[in-house]
Image (cartoon, rainbow, N blue to C red):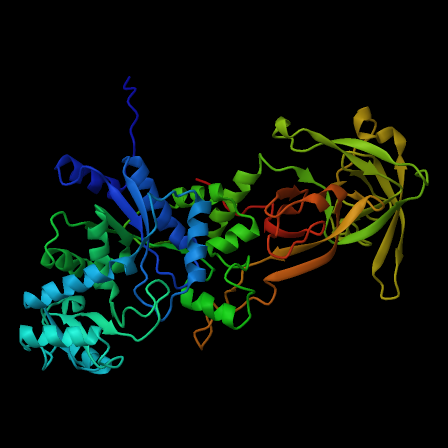
Length: 555
């Protein structure tokens, strides 16, 4: 029998294996190059973990580099949030953080080098005119009237652009490639534009900035990146990437390989849309727990392990596909199940009075913290005459197969006694406020009572020994209407019930000591985590991370 394990390799690993075998690569170096113009989302997590994972697999290096070449959209807030997100995911970058802006002088030198080779020229066409001259997918472009300027004139104009002589948009530097190329990206693309803006890193040192397609391959080459792993929308840009590193004569040029983006159904991932939601106050910030930014997932209570497992299960491919949000929920549910204490918490309480229980008596029941993990031990839970139960655990006129409390029915109070409903009270609006029961002392949970059985078990908290907290329940931020999650204006159909705030939840008193990010299973209600933003000492706010029920069936 062959005992050798067959290891499945994705297409990127096969390409790297080939490069190593052919001697093109001796040490694999990858990078994650975010533009600091917003918070990272779940799709970026795939890129981070893929690039980091490849570097670790091949015992190479993983760089973090901020592609900060556009000062009009960038902010230090975004830089800081991105660093926090990557650390939280467990992707440790090599050495110092890199910034594209640190390479501006080298990029300028590369642009001058292209001008001297006759491969770049200063163009006076406006942005609209450049678009008109570019042509279409079926028609070639038209050459700029400034395309044949002399090398000397181009050098002088480009130097004047750097010196601040011209206004924004007055001139650009373009690569001189092929206006008839079937790939529109190769039709003399703009590689430098004028922008009189203060940069978060370089201040007012520069007023010209390189375009992404020109800057990115140079950044990779400077850092010795061997494999530039990027998403599929850059596939058509790869010829330009290769052109830049070849024409600027890098000795060991990096290689670009594209993979399919991670799409998640029913969520908002685009930075532009998220920014709009933030600015319009529909969400309370980039870290609103209804979003799938990494910061939002962390705040809601998702764990880095669950994100990593989700990315791994989603796989790496060349074909675009959409992952089920239920898979993400499944991953966090599976991660939390063995390691979280299972606490009693009543989210929508009504009072339950045990009429025949001694008035001043308090008992303490031993409750195992997690039946799947003995190491978590047990705790003492107080029990008294007056309790709180979930409002949905009592009905005046129950439907068939309703096994919880209703007049005349008996249920087990979890880890305590059988109780039988004998009466109930209502307020002036007809809402049930108190349920009256009697209990049978012989049915105490540790007495192994077997004379009769009940079909329903409900949880509870002692009224006198519980604490009041706020809990937040989340549903999808966007909803599908008539088969679409967007309306006629192109905006998302926002779900008005995406957030439910419960301010009178009753929980075990020990939960008042919970700290930000502490997570628990609230028995029968789901997994909850302490919100780090709105909680105060002694007054935690609990975010529901995920319910206990799953619609996802792992294959």
